[in-house]
Length: 266
DNA sequence: TCATTAACCGTCG
DNA sequence: CGACGGTTAATGA
Image (cartoon, rainbow, N blue to C red; front, side, top):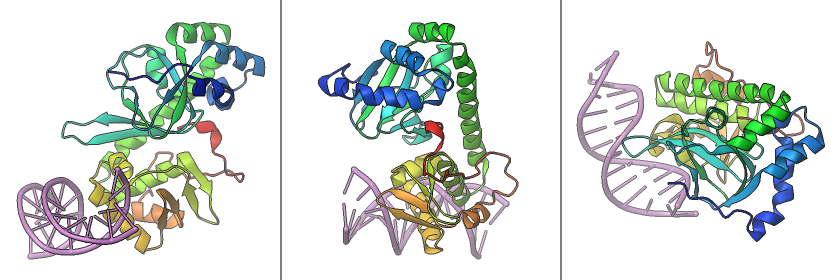
């Protein structure tokens, strides 16, 4: 069951310019002229979701492409024993699930709003139409899909790391790659609020284990948490502690000087 | 609701 | 055996 937000409520209408701005920042429309982006925005709708509201559920038929405009969204699988495995977190300008939007098969994960969130929706027929008009989009889609695949690869590599500390460390480094902003020499802040439960579900451990590992890292001065925002004070030491040495996945932490990460991509 | 700590317990190398 | 991590419970913010 998908509970959808109200289409174009008054609040959503007022937020439409914000949604268009988010679309313009999306890597999906890289290389398109502003009026071309505008024509895509004109074909899409804006939906509003409250914290905890489900955008779509794993197994739901995919009706189109969702792009986050404002707020935060978590994507996860519900695992048999009642726990949940986080597939990824989304920030504004990121697509929720490119794969299903383009192959039309059911959603691979459940998407839940973490904050009040505005999302752009483009139905599959309109998406197909837009692609026909702007073939440049295909290259952007492929790039986005490749990033989704990399993220999944990191997830499986993470699960294969033998102990919980390693998985937590790997999850932190990957989140830093995605949401990191420079916070001084060798330090990166994960600019995304995450509960301990979020971290635990991302790493595939219980919340207590996540707390144990994080407390330990905190005691060593490697990380520091403030109001659900984690700062890695010493990336190099976290890498050592996580034994990333021979990991072939691209967890390398980057942060641009102006504090922006590349356009919302996972 | 979220975070933390500690005690306890089963598994596995 | 002993490290590890899940379970449970208690407590504080």
